[in-house]
Image 1: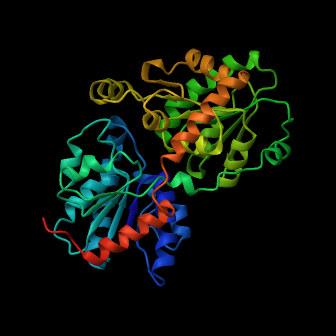
Image 2: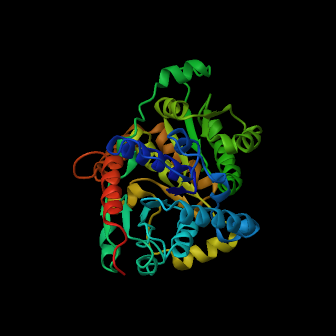
Length: 380
């Protein structure tokens, strides 16, 4: 059984399922996932999009739905008794699920270590009694959890095995973009709450960039469940804004782009892997911003910067996420070839650090899952 709560988790789950099917022919799946996991043979118990909520204020109107979906997941797990339950990211939902299943006879594995190195370090100890193993994407994470008695394995980041090579000329041809026209990829996130906060400031950034970059065109790769919202938001932008869905369209847009303006998250690693220099912008609502300023302990939010321990990628977050500051940083990447080259060299070094020792991340994760499933629940 697998439970994912957002699109990035859906991709992780699907890759894990593919690897598990190779290693254990005939394996079957149940749980919660999105279109990628459903494509690998799992009928989702509830719509995954209902779980994709971020922020303290944003979650309040959805509490009743989340509680109903929690009951569905708990009831299904106890009734079916899978060989193992793999909860994928979404720690707010999945830690509660693991807690509810404390007396279950099957092991519970969590995929994607929460960022205890960034904030709420006590979460490591809080997780330890409820999970049998943790799969970490970043090489510096396992010691935080093994120190509190939770076995943890660095399995590598899935971005290193994804084929992100696109066809830039084909993208320009399909969408009528001349070869000499500057193309900016804009990536406002995968949650409705994110696009509501970020697309207005990103749109204003584009308005400031347009006079200095004649012909500037924007590509906005997005996901089907938020496509309508994104199209409505970019309709009034002062430059052509091409909204696309699908992994191949996104890869082609990356290959065609001169630079990117992106929300913080996994997409920054995708851009780094694809060789697209970027500027990171991110905002929360006022209350969450106040809280983040007091709780977050790291200097940067971009994983490339965190891995390298310096700001290789410009970040403008919270109060600094203004159109003026984002436009200034983006202009450097659109116009300065040396700035682009420096960032791409740094991004390559960060991506190399995300490769696991031997094999691919999904294969390493599948091996650990099967090993833990064979061992059963660990003694508490």
